[in-house]
Image (cartoon, rainbow over all chains, first blue to last red; front, top):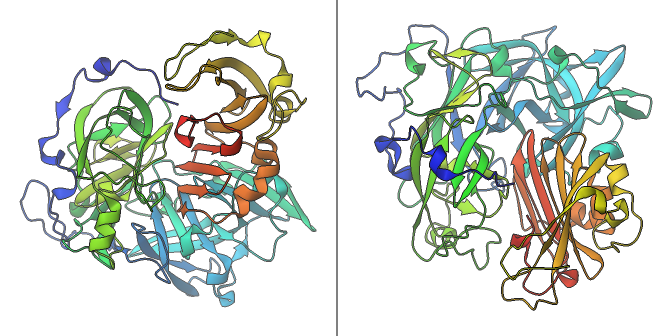
Length: 406
Length: 158
């Protein structure tokens, strides 16, 4: 719900982020990364490759929602680490934790071992904003670029070798097919997912609320041997005419290599409160729990009472289609109100954009209804920016996580 | 009960004056003794009367709010003795089979007008729903237009 907060108090200590106040118009050069100071950087001194591509391309079959970012992940058998499979089109999600892959995308020859507790396989009911997924927990080595996480729990969604979804899981909503993706990897500031785990025996699974934290699904990045204190998501601006395949980077570590220094001007923490990376966005007389979320395809925010210009689309249910590009004025701050900035962001007419750019998979500055209780800065926010996500409790570039920064 | 003709007028009753019998599942009688509060391990926190700007004063509706033990806030909207809408948010997701009753199958099976990882919307003939959020931060709502007062849309369900 809208937290009732006097806006003026949130503006104390307000600073303006002149460099970032223009929405998605910043141009960003990629490959090699360039420090925001403008001085070219040498490649990392480390021999470890800590950068992998992120692609917005419509997914495995072209049917994934617009503005869905994907990475490739290599999964290996723990006992036989040379037995590996690289799986493409894994959604990169700063709004969840851990690696989850659909069972039918995994070669049987990979032969991943179940995570057994007391001799029984472990399963999880996983809840996203759009619904539930059900699957077993398996142990795997996870590799991205040159980074390796050894023996980490991952979820195998729709694993046919365990009993089907229990009703106390499916009663929590609709099944989530992840929009046709092969899986999802969460890099939220919270490392462990704190989910609902089950122990399976015979034909049924029952809730096991005693699963140790280190047996829960965890962000593989958090378990990397190096560069494990956070990630940087960097996407280019959507070019004029749109893009059917937009490529940016996911960089591992913050302040651990020359190519991942904390160059952000705005750091929003949830220290001392939620400890989960969420921060506060004030908008239209409301105050909302907030996140920079690559797993959200648009900015989701409440229908404004004070901006009649933000009409919804005629045919695209729920999206905003202002007759002319309309700036929304927000204040973003840490959960405790510190580090507040004024931030203005342009919302475009999504229908007009798609009519003009019918082949694009990336839509800049797209907004949608929703978020009665949340202000979700979805993927359009990331275009033309470098966004940092630091793990809870980690020293990341001299600042302790959890935080998001840009 | 007294209502004010503001867009969101408020009359807060203290919890204890409202019987649990006021809690019902979407689309069903508010007077039917439903066990949502017990089933959801929840306490009733407040009841509020609303009226809609521009609407006839004879068409106010009420909301009742539940707080569950695991941190979910659930609001039920009642008009003409029927629950015409529900909205919820919290760090967990409620039992929507309990909350949505006979409409739960529609929520699960209807073709969404939009879906992604973080959001799902259904824009059916007589069932409109939306869920949003990220892990540990969830919200959802549903509206039955044929049971709702005139001028009440899904945007009022919050």
